[in-house]
Length: 370
Ligand SMILES: C[S@@+](CC[C@H](N)C(=O)[O-])C[C@H]1O[C@@H](n2cnc3c(N)ncnc32)[C@H](O)[C@@H]1O
Image (cartoon, rainbow, N blue to C red; front, side, top):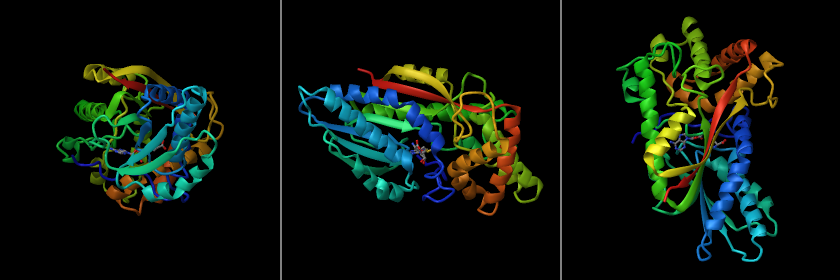
């Protein structure tokens, strides 16, 4: 299978890097902490006395503080399990695999691992961390060898742009994802790509999990079956397309270049996801919920008021640039990138004047079916 070209976050830890601009994704990890703790507790309890190694994989780990944040969360959860089960103490060791596409900045991850040394403490389980550069739409592990899979803010990425779009058999004129003017046939192509990818992901992970193994999956979704609801990813990508179009009008980007650019992405509804999981019969859904997160990663308020449109526009632009810059540079070249995100920040600011925008995020805790 081909890998989606250009899907990698901005490397390093400089101003525009993913590591320095991943607060939005960090909030999701904090929000799902109780579900993570519960899943780890259940995995811990199911470990046989003989088998004391817990194998944990983070799929789409990227680079930056969230990668380490996840590792310390799991270690903390195992430590509290060990404390609770004082009478029949198990010497559990944890083997972590940090997975992402080969273009990920694994060096930054490896270099930052020593920060974990401070996690020490009496009940800290011995743990080992390895990198695993490969698409999670492929086999990653031997059969029945993993206890827990985690993936946060990654599964909305598709393995590729649907072929009929990348070959220009169908056009999505003026859009880069599903927008208001996207033809129904093109929407169907994005949906079919999602179904294929998600079914494959479930089948692969089912084989790799031990009996009783679990997965915690958190990804961007949709609130209902509508494709274009305010605050959802479709609206955000329309604003990126509008920014690119403004560069077409200035003669900086060719119109054909814009029309041939599509993002390998799809945000499903909870209903779509449930249907695929139930149809597969591979997993029991232990927990499924949707929560919302402000577009502006620095805005922690619950209300519907945006206090500083320009400031929020700039914050959203920094966050989206850290995720999309490599994909955009691969297709349009490097020259437009600074100007594009200046335009985008002001377009987002104007958009937020109409109403505050919040992404819907789906959280699923799944158990391997028996
Ligand atoms: C927005 S980042 C999220 C990173 C991290 N989990 C966090 O919460 O900050 C999404 C990551 O998913 C990775 N990704 C996308 N498709 C992937 C695939 N098929 N296999 C492995 N990783 C993938 C991207 O390379 C990127 O690093």
